[in-house]
Image 1: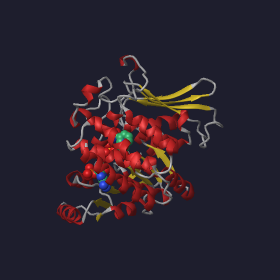
Image 2: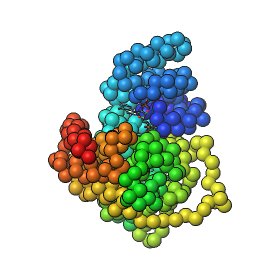
Image 3: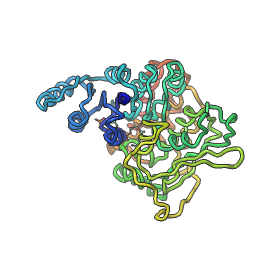
Length: 394
Ligand code: NDP
């Protein structure tokens, strides 16, 4: 029997993290949980530790670590408890870790995902912000170490599965005309501008098809999520922005497509359940049970397609613009968006002001390319400061 693969789940207490553990739990012979990390949800992490018995746990700070240590000791559960951002990088690089699920939300997930890339791990990438903020640096680190990078975002998983098996990052050589990213359109697809001015955080987090964390739910509602995915697709598959098209497909049955020179379109279909792309990334090229219902073609309603409305959802255009501008523009876009979304979720910014804050930050902060992680993180901080001032002025 082959040895189980060691897995580190970064962001274990989140939506993707929990779905990952659901899939992993179905295959105890294949996977062993080496490390789990959380930020604030200590109760959930404690329950996961009792169930999966990892060697390492990471939490945000020393107080949280002390409290978790005590609870684990009382429950007779072993496992070393670490804390802080450095510990995330440490567990992502452990020799006994074969695969790292990068499922922390936001730019906070970049250093640990990059550490996994530098350590040559199999990276299961949910944290799209890593590629948005540091695309070139990240891809170079993957190539230099021989790491493998497997997309977890359902759209990118669909594209990955629709590309030729030997695809080497050159769309022209593989006869690819276009990458088509599908978007559900989010909960506000049919709302007018006037209605959008009045929507609140809970409305935005009520996604019609997917159950996700609050930040990505808001991004889905503004279409910034699709914009971040355009940038992610550019880095993952080596495609220029002109070859990436976004199509609104409200049913979320087709998860994305690749259109070839001869007119063929390869698509991946399935139920909107993140366990499918997670299982695909975990086991590729094998296919494992993920607990997902089969698609029932006879109960499907019509499959429909629309152009995205960039007037009502300008975030998608801002992301395309940032990708075209290059340099640190995508990192600035991402930082401003994180600040604006956090303010919106806290009740301190209107939904329609999210793109205004992002656009103002892109105009107000220098986007000259940084060539190191430190440079990018400094740019991220600068953009956050600028965006916070913009939020305060709204
Ligand atoms: P959640 O908000 O549900 O979970 C985020 C996770 O990150 C939690 O474990 C959280 O810990 C942890 N975390 C938050 N802030 C920090 C920090 N500063 N340092 C360390 N850990 C932190 O997010 P999702 O699971 O929805 O999304 C995770 C990533 O996956 C995002 O990049 C998202 O874009 C991407 N993604 C998500 C999809 C989905 O279906 N949800 C689909 C495709 C991509 P705690 O909860 O303990 O505070």
